[in-house]
Image 1 (cartoon, helix red, strand yellow):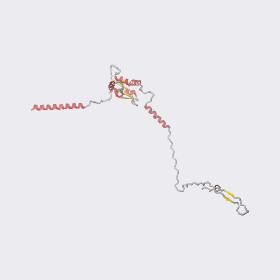
Image 2 (spheres, one colour; image 1 turned 45 degrees about the vertical axis):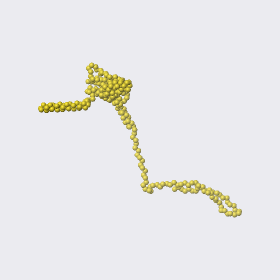
Image 3 (spheres, one colour; image 1 turned 60 degrees about the vertical axis):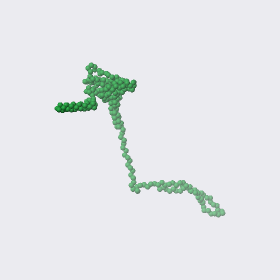
Image 4 (spheres, helix red, strand yellow; image 1 turned 180 degrees about the horizontal axis):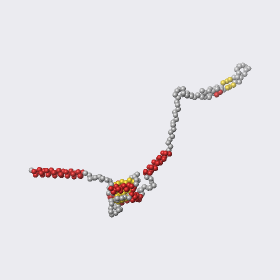
Length: 266
């Protein structure tokens, strides 16, 4: 009987261990195999990017860890199989640093940092150099080192950019200089423009308050039209009608309104 309980307990332990192992495997299958890195750049890359930013100046920005497929595309020519092979080769390439203009984010140059090597000081070349040459993208490689020269990095980067005429001309002013010049010009123009004079408005005329102060309105006098009166007959002497008496010759006088004395206008 004791053996029976012993075997029963042993079987229960085996069953529990089996269930636990199944749960662990199930969790491991459902868990995605991802893990975040602590830093974007390695210590040698951080040391190099500080010198690279000083070499290119304030006119450019430096971006890190840029995929080649994000800035280079495969042209639609040739057969489909050749384009697929070119896209596969491009998807595997990554630029350590990408230099772009600050104003328009135009791509200027790509830079890769090769690991140290005791055999050769020159950085190795691979298919990425051929891809950049075909795409006409300036590409420069540097070796990891304890000390970097700002002048040497500047010469190599701008030499590659000058080969494709990407470096801005020296006679073109920068955006900051242009803004300062426009600000100075606006200040000079503002000083030359005089301030407008303030003109006092005329005082309103005093209006009479009493009825006596108000002047009576003048009424126009109508002008009588020029009229002509009927002629009248005048005799110099009284008429004495008789057989031997001759009648005096009558005289006709015409009197116009103009001959009458005019009344003075009020």
